[in-house]
Every structure is written in structure tokens, then in C-alpha cells.
Length: 421
Ligand code: AMP
Ligand code: GLY
Image (cartoon, rainbow, N blue to C red; front, side):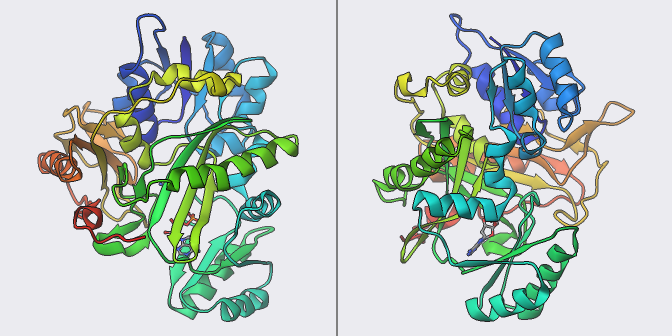
């Protein structure tokens, strides 16, 4: 099976590695990858392509005669890559533009949730600054202010300061057609549950937890994610079933009922609150960096699994197989991430097989350099969460990148038994 993987960050490096690692002699996977990531490029034939241009992606799909297209990031999906490829009869792992609205518009996601009977957080969509101010006062502190449009995980401000909340609302509204969502604050630990969907059946992967803030202890600004681990030793048994039956499956059923079936991965971002499980957000693709931990544990051949999603045969899949133990990923970020990350610094120590490349490139001298905010993802695995942590941090200690930073407390609250539901 020849697969074209669209996207070239750490998540795609993890997907490509899992595709290669679980490839079987009966069903070998051959990979064509998007150029630009020196780590990812080693795992397949690399091709330049513009992931946001459906015609360009289609040119590669037809030129390389691929059997399946797997799309990593959300932006190409929102740009209609899947629609263009499906029109030519090639299977795609990833939703159409219409189904990708579950992530692209927070207000659309709320409508679908309401229709699916999934308990929402209280929220108001505002189109003027006066409406936003009134909604902040109605909801109270801490304030949760979200850009209605796609913002790569950085459109959300959670703050105790009304001034900061209002300033972010103003920034969201300043954009053409801008809207802002003011939401009730959800207390309780967060869970990322990835559910594969072929349009009808929801199949959960192992749950993970992401660390969104830049600094230890959850301080500093929100980022795309600074680390993750899986599975979650503190999650009550039965929670995954509850999420699948109470949230993912009803949403998938509602999308099918609307005539825009959801095919791909439905990322359920949840909070385990004192009032029950609440949805923080939906995404329409693998989470980054949770995927780096989750896929490190997968034993089932990933290529066949993603193909069965695209072909609508998920119900016939045997139960997924997972390695025992835990996996953890720590993000090594560039100086000044998430504000204005510095790029072009030389990286040493990235040859370790525990390292995935997220934002790297080669300079004119052929040296590996930083080329994005999140530069490397270091993976640790082990029979206990402590072992997985120790493994990842030991490798981090051998990597050098001037000005870089990482969180030292990934999975620490879980290891110390400080998470309660
Ligand atoms: P989102 O882009 O909606 O996932 O939001 C990014 C992050 O902001 C989430 O992962 C949470 O950490 C935080 N967040 C979003 N919505 C809420 C909420 N209603 N209450 C508390 N924290 C939130
Ligand atoms: N890790 C958060 C995200 O992928 O959106």
C-alpha cells in the first residue's frame, strides 16, 4: 500500500514512524512524505508539495499513484484537500471541508454538540466588544475567551484579568467577520481522547493528556502543546466508554445525519469536571504532541487501520493491540516560543532514535538547525510512567540547542498521584 502523508511536523514524523514500524510483509507500507522535515524524510520518498493547495496535492496523488492519502494537520483539511482527492476516487484519511468545520468553527461545533445531545459548557458567541464585555461579566472569572476561527491552539486565553480577556476579545473581533466565544471555565483535569471514525463507527485510541502551557506547573502562555503522556493511570475505568458513547458516537451520528459524515480522527478534548465530563474542544485530526506518545504504544498495523477508516470498514476491525506500559513525549521548543521563536540555531544530539523532528531543517552547511517553534519531540517509554519520564528526560539531557526550553514536569502530577477526578 502506497501512502501519501500530508504535513511535515512532529506529529507526521510520529505517524510515519508508526506506519513504518507496524508495516507487515503481507501488507507492506510504502511512504511518500512531504519534504521539509529531515527526520521524516528518512522514512519515505520525499516530495515538495503545498499542503494548502488541493490541485498541488492532487498532482502528487495521481503522479505517485498512491492508494491512500493521510492528512496530518487541520489547515489542509479546512482547505478542502480531502474533497479534491475523493473526487478522483482515491481514499483519504481525514474529513472533508464540511466535516472539518467541527474544528474550524467553534460555534459550528457547539451547534453539532447541541443537536447530538452532548452537554455543553455555557458559552456565548459575540460579534461586538459590548456583547463580549457583557458575556465576560455574566460568566465571571476565570475568563475563557476563544477566537471563533482556526488559530492553531493559540486562539484561547484563560485569565483572571478582565482587561486581558477583553483585549483578546477585541483582537479576535478585529479580523474580517471576526467572532469571539466567551465560555464558562471548566475545572478538572483534561483528557485527549482520539476516536477513529469511518463516518459511522467510533473506535477510541488510548487516552492521553497534553500540557498546553509553556511553563512548569501550568504557568506562562498557551502553546500548541509542550508534552503529553499515555495512557492515564488516574482515569476511572469506564471513562473511555462513557466518552465514546456519550460524546464521540453521537457527534459522528449527527454529522452523518447532516449528510457530512466525519471520516478520519475525531479528537475529543475533554475536562473531567466536578459536574461530569465536558467537551473543551473538538479537533479533526491527530493531536500534536499527544500522537507522539499514543502511537509509540500501538501494535496494530497502522496503515491497514487508517485504510479501513477511509474505506468505511472500521466495524470489521479486530480490537486494537497496544504495548504494555507508558509512553511520554517532551517538546523541546525554540527560544521565544510561543511568541516569536528564534530559528536557524544548530542542534546536536538529535540522532537518538527517541527523537522525532518537529521543526528542523538543514542549513547551507548541511547542519541540522531549528526551523520552527516546537523543534524536537523526545519520546520515552517504559513499564511505569516514571520509567517513561526518566527515559525521555535522560535523552533531553544529551541534546543541545541554544536558547531552547522544555517543561520538566510532563506527567509529574500523575506520577505523584496529584490528579483526582
Ligand atoms: P482550545 O483551543 O479550545 O482547546 O483551548 C486551549 C486550551 O485552553 C485548552 O486545552 C484548555 O487548557 C484551555 N481551555 C479552553 N477552554 C477552557 C474552559 N472552558 N475552561 C478552562 N480551560 C479551558
Ligand atoms: N495538542 C493539542 C492539539 O493538537 O490541538
